[in-house]
Length: 301
Picture 1 (cartoon, rainbow, N blue to C red):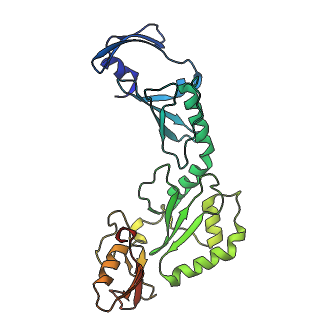
Picture 2: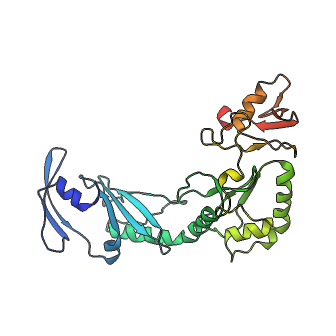
Picture 3: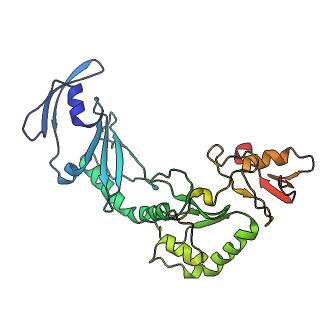
C-alpha cells in the first residue's frame, strides 16, 4: 500500500485534525485489537521533501525515497521493531557499503533520513564512476547492476574483456583489474597496465584513466551493438547459461572460440585423452584440437 492516503483508507477511524494534514487522531486495529493513537507528522523541511512511497497498516514498515545532488533516486526501507524507539529500526538500503546508523533513544526518523542523505552524498563519486561506465561502455556483467554492485565486466573487443572491482570509498583510484580472453590478446593488455600504472591520475574519471593506461578505446554503445563483439558458447550455442557468459577462450590465435566454463569442463571431462591436476582439467579445444584447460567450477568443488 503506497502513501498515507492508502493507510487512511485502511484505517477509516484515523481522522485528520487540521487542514495541513500534519495531525491525525483516532483508532487503528492491529491483531484484532483497537488502539487509540495520535500522529504528529514532523515539520522538518528535509523530511517534507522525502517522498513516502509505502506505509503498512501496522505502521511497522516505512519506505522513503531520497535524491542525491546528481538527481539519482534512492530508497530506504525502515522496519520498526517492538523495542522502537529504544532500539533503532532496521534499515535496508541499496548501498555498496554498510549504512552505519547513529542512534540514541531520543533519535527520530528525521535523524535517520538526514543520515541517509549524508550517506548518499558520500557515495556520489562512486555512482558517478559506475554510471559513466554503464552509459559509455558495453557492460557484460552484471546484466542489470544494482547501486550496491562494485563489479563491472567491460567488453574490450571480440571475446576480450576486463573485470573491475571498484572501491566505493576511493572510486577514482586504480581498481582491481582482471582480464579475460585468449593469452595472445590479454597478455599485451596486462603489460600495458603494468607499464602505465604510474600514469593513473585520481583527478580524472575512472573510465578515462582506463583508456589512457590501457592505450585503448572501449567499444561504444553509440556505435556498436552488443552482438558485434560477443559470441555464443561453442558447445551449447547460447550466450548466457545460468547467468554466466562465455569466459573461457581458446588460446590459439586462429581459433579464439569462447566457451562457458561449465560447458568446457563437462566437455573435457568426457574426453578419454584429458587429464586433471587438482582443480584444473587439460584437454583439446573442441574446434581446433589445440591444448586448452579450464578450472573446475566452485559449484563442483
